Each structure stands twice: as C-alpha cells, then as structure tokens.
Length: 180
Image 1 (spheres, helix red, strand yellow):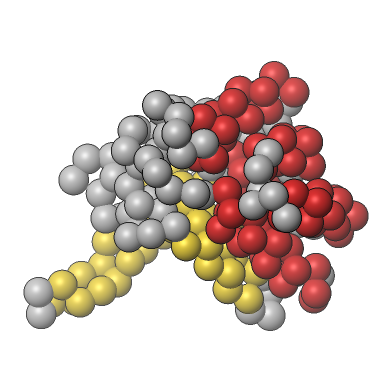
Image 2 (cartoon, one colour; image 1 turned 180 degrees about the vertical axis):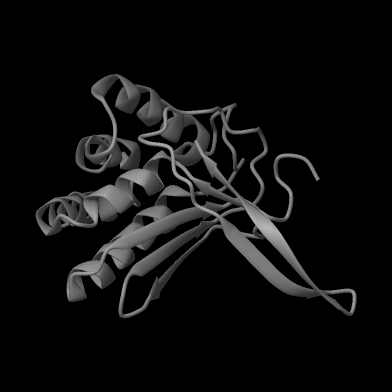
C-alpha cells in the first residue's frame, strides 16, 4: 500500500505545536485572536499566523521558517506547483477548524491531541471533545506529492490500532504513527 496505506496517522509540525500550546491558555487565546483577525479574508496568511502564534511552542526559529514555507506551498496555496491538494482551498476549513478546537479546549481547560489523517475523501477538520481532552483530526485526501520530512519537535512513541469489519471478517491492524 505504500506510504499512504489505509492505516496511517501523522503527527505533523502543526499538530505537535497545537498539542504543545494546549496546556497554556494564554497562548491558545493569542492564536485564537490571530485567527479571528484573518478569518474575514478566508484565512489568507494562515501560514504567517501559525509561524508566529503556534509553531514557536515546539520549534526553533530556523525550523519555523522551513515549516512556514512548506505550509504555504504544500497546504495553503492551491496554485503552488508543490501543493498537496491541487485546486482545493485548505486554508479556510483549516483556519475554521483550528478556531473550533481552540474554543472547545479553552471552554473546559482541556488539552488538545491533534492528528493528520491523509486518506480521506475531502478536507475535514473534526473536533471531538471528551471529559479528558479535545481531539482534532485533520482529514485530507491523499497528498498529490509525498510530504517532505520536517523537523520533529520530539520523537513520540505513540501507537494505534484499527479494528474493523473487512469482507465479512473482523481485522485489527496496527496504525502507523509518523512524526514529520
């Protein structure tokens, strides 16, 4: 099935940084305010907001510059030759999804656990709230180009499993958790 097989979760830089700021209400409110400022422009400049108000929680300035450039060209500029999602406006649902997860987490002082699932039919930011945490799932189609490796804030040792009905049989598979 290759890199983008059916069982893949990615803890990318934005997800790592969102997890990191989720224990600091002041930083989350700062990000929320910055997102609100650009919401009227369909989140144009979202990579700037993430570079200024999210990524410093988990990355060095040198890493942030590289990640910001990749977010712009791979995620938020649908006309870029290196975009993962040709022709799709990712910035608007991404920005709105971030605002929703921040609202949910700040409302009850809960930590965030964010994941990218790159094997979906559309751009869909799903916020799930329990009594212990708020989970953000950034579901996207499979990228048109393979994502470039990025600097990880810290290695994680997360493991996941998927149990499902496949062709009349129940199967449990380990989910690959990738730090990018």
